[in-house]
Length: 415
Image (cartoon, rainbow, N blue to C red; front, side):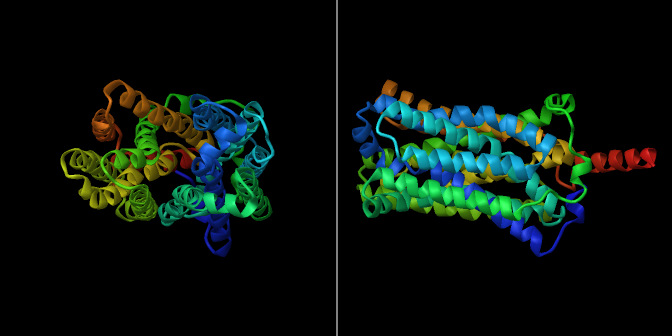
């Protein structure tokens, strides 16, 4: 449902894809960079453990709000300026966090970074759908979405060494902020509005009623919320869970790294295969079901089995996540894709804060992580159920065929 993208191919499209991937990478690079040096930040800013948790909760809430705004702006004034401005705010906030000496100022610049993240986020799927034909948009979507887990992995693996090389956590955060600013500059230099898309840009600001009333879109948003909740629990709490089950710090870190590698592989493979087969729902069922089975195995199996189970879980949670970026383009016209992506990502990103909070609460209430694991199993099964509510929007489904018919009729009537 994106006629602009059907006219695009060639090397320039891949330059846009590279720019989008770098922006996606910089988002999670900046978001997760405080994690490895969190204790140093807490001590340096003289704050409590409860307060330091706001470093991750606050961005989730702010990003949720501004994703919706960024999506509407993408449809109203274009992807280049909105994502470019968002990227600059993201990098600037990340850079300025590395100059702070008190916690309130640190939170202020964290909020600035989150505003930028929210503004830029829904522009990425619109850019890819605008510059790639339908036949290759699945592969292209998988490649740029891979930037998210890659950014998180780099932040987890490199920040500690960067802090040592730059004199502390402040130097590390400044360095990542500069990286994000440079990637934003690449976007502003490289990316143009797709030819023909200017005719589709709306002059007024506001969420279109047809998008707000699109029930399948809200189902996708709910599914992404549940899936990001699962992901945030697994990334934030699995190292602690594994340590409680007897793993050393090095072993837990290595297992989570393997989890991330499987995650990166899957976010490329799933959209590509989905596009080639012309199906969406079977991939959601398969990967969400695998999440449920994998976590059940983690509950029942001996601790040593985690070496096998965690890579499976890393791949499983990535499948529905990738679909969350792909499905809005199936459900709305290109002219409304920014707003549609904004809805899905606005709701979905709240799961990052909710999941990690819920896992901690369940751990406090029950005294173990078993209740958290049970909650993941239930959540994965909920994603399976939500996929039954969705129509099949791949090209082999009735929804896609009826949409194509409607577009042809509209084009005939308009002519």
